[in-house]
Amino acid sequence: MTRILSFLKNENDLAKRLAKGEAKAQHIFYEKYSAKFLGICHRYIKDKMAAEDIMVESMMKIFDKIHLYDSKGSFEGWCKRLVINQSLSYLRTQKVFEIELADTLELNSAETDSLETQDLLHLIHELPSGYRTVFNLYAIEGYSHAEIAEMLQITEGTSKSQLSRARSFLQEKIKKNDLPTTSNFL
Amino acid sequence: MKNLLDQHFSEKLKDLEIPPSKRANELFARKVNKRHTQWKYFTAAASVVLLASIVYLNSEIDDSAPTAQQIENAPVESAVLNHFQEEESPVNVKTEEQKFIQKTLNEPVISAQNFSDIEPKQEEILVRRFSEEKIISTQLRKLESNLVDYTLVDALQEKIEIEAPKMEVQEELKEKKLLTKIVEEAKYVANGEKPDLDRAGIKPAATMAIHKNGFIANEKQQIRESVNRIKDFLSK
Image (cartoon, rainbow over all chains, first blue to last red; front, side, top):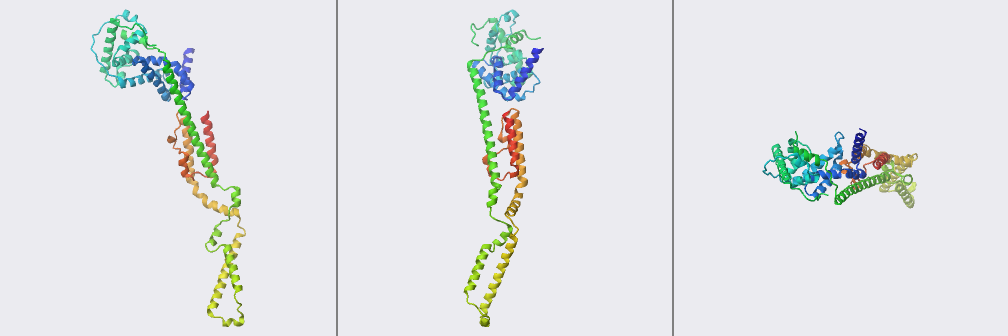
């Protein structure tokens, strides 16, 4: 409990110092969250360099809009939302929502349990950008189809179909065991 | 019930952390330094403009108020003197009087014995001259009597009283507005925002120079104190 309280205190304290524009607080914030935010960006943006650029831009956006944080919810959650929005903004300039037809395959847990994090990330990157975006937002971030539709300016039906096709694509890839032999993410 | 595939991906990727490359770290450092440098330049520029405005206003106020030496050296001016200045100055009156006396002395004496022999035209001239002389002497006496108790301080006081009312009300209002604007802008700065002279409506020194009569002498101290308070607040 004390650890949670101390964590909360640190998070709010950091937010206050960022609001004052302290350079030291900004560097501490980067050291603490840059890896996590890059993980989020890279899930949406396949190109790692572009993902890093968007991560840094997201940081600058957080510093600019820190005065809008009302200390009610989680500070990390608030920042993550900004990072996701920044990633989506980038994708809007790049994206083409592709619709592919694929058969739905059944997977058992044994097939997926053996997959490492990097393998799963690779599979995500294999998805077309539209499928990848919806899959990230629904399956990993936990947004509803209504929220996704609002964020991406699409219909709920499109969101649902994109998700369905993303799942089909991933299942097919897993079935075929189409995974990278080397990792180039680090 | 959550889809098995979704669940698996979520568990593995939700808290995924990827350390940024050196390139990303340098990019971040560059962007942060640029933000702070711009902020410092802006703050320095704003401080210089504010100081320049204060120095300029101080010099304007000092110029308008007479110093002790200026009071001492100031020429005597008053409405009393101005009344006679249009016609003749005391110096000119005396000079003309002297001239008249000199001229009279130079003229041949007309004795009573010969008075009846004087031509009517000459008589008129004499009468006119005598009345002119009388008028001039009367004016001179009046002038001297009025000036007996009239001192230099009285003259300057009269001038100040005539000129002061012009500057009172409007300049007070203008000054209050500027102070209010500075205080309001300081609140924005305290909240972490960058100061904005346009938002505050504070004009640079060059523009304020056009309105050089915008402040009155007895508000100078108030402005100084306000600016010092704001500087202390910004430096914290």
